[in-house]
Picture 1 (cartoon, one colour):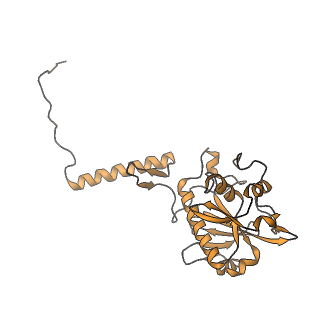
Picture 2 (picture 1 turned 180 degrees about the vertical axis):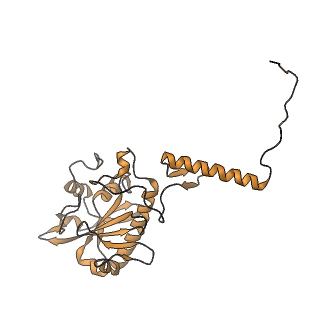
Picture 3 (picture 1 turned 90 degrees about the vertical axis):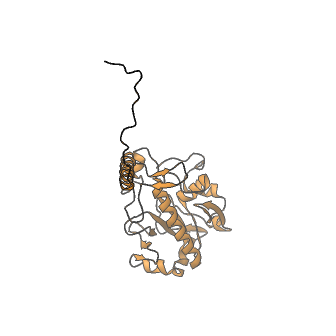
Length: 250
């Protein structure tokens, strides 16, 4: 072993001097980074500059989770919440549906877990996989898309799919043919002072008509949305006492 006390090493030959080689190196780093995020299940990255990069699903790809089994999405089994890309997609579908219902003059309100999310976060619940909206069954004929969807699925002029659900008496509006993120439209009608459905779906049980007279509103997914009045009492009818403060995962 020799110690060279007075010897200075030069920088050597500079690497990646050409613009093309620098571009190739940048592409290599981006591919490796993307592969790392996909392997780790990271869907959204916020850079120091404030820009956001997405590594999850898009409207042109399948959603990040598969079929829902017994009301529980696969990501909860992995102790994770809804992927942010899926939440972003759900917000877009919800905004589209809200706009269509309002243009058609259909009476609607937030239902079930979506109303709970609005009450707790002003948004979709961090673990939810759908948006639930109640509608007045008598108003369905005001919407051309819902009327057509009674007989077969129909794609609207912005690529959203309107269809009658096979699981019960309600409608779905899906993000696209490929990405099945969706909003549920649950028709209710008045019977002896109670808003009822022909069949109840998940937690969307019947409730007194008085909760819709007058209607209230609440912040949800970036806008004010119609809601029942006395929301806390409404949710406790649908679920259980103390649901707002003590929500449980499915």
